[in-house]
Length: 108
Image (cartoon, rainbow, N blue to C red; front, side, top):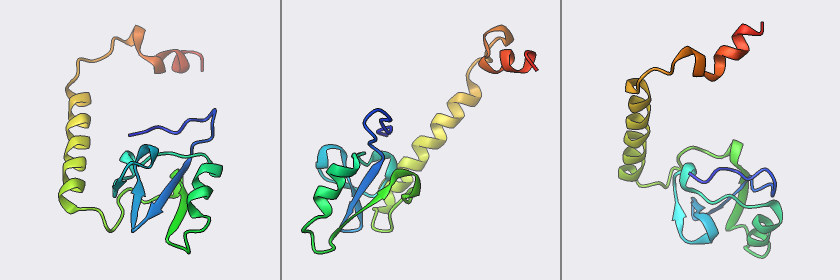
């Protein structure tokens, strides 16, 4: 996943052919986590003159999976997310003294 860059306001996704542009406009993906993030000016430069074939959406409003996404790629992505979540559940517990939430709880 390409995280949004708050310093440059890269929070826009570009959509064409029912799919998101990948980073640096190098191909397409139906999976939001794999989409490129663009600043508004750059994103609009693809919309201008596209005769409605290109649109943009804020990352926060984009669909996690586009309807045109290949189902096998969506399934593989979901399996990867599941496996990552499982690894977090089976990771050794964080000692209370090192846990980031402990300080917040103790200060209340």
